[in-house]
Image 1 (cartoon, rainbow, N blue to C red):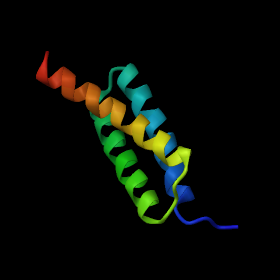
Image 2: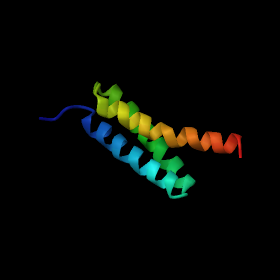
Image 3: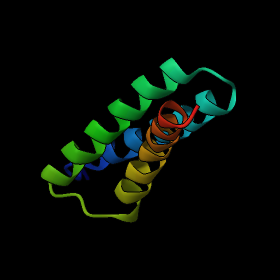
Image 4: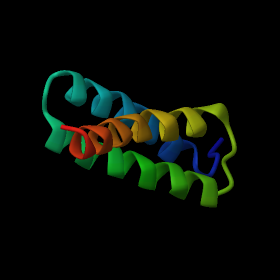
Length: 76
């Protein structure tokens, strides 16, 4: 059974976790890149019609490091 957008949602979730791990390990450039990729995959998943908690969680996990990097950039 192939559900459109499920693969992108899962990838967004995994990449969001990796992005948070890179942020925690002190690799902000990798965290930024992975966060952006995770957000794009979550958007593709929504456009494909997949509306599940997995997609939302992937989006949130991908946005968290982006927000933290923005705060660190604005308030060093």
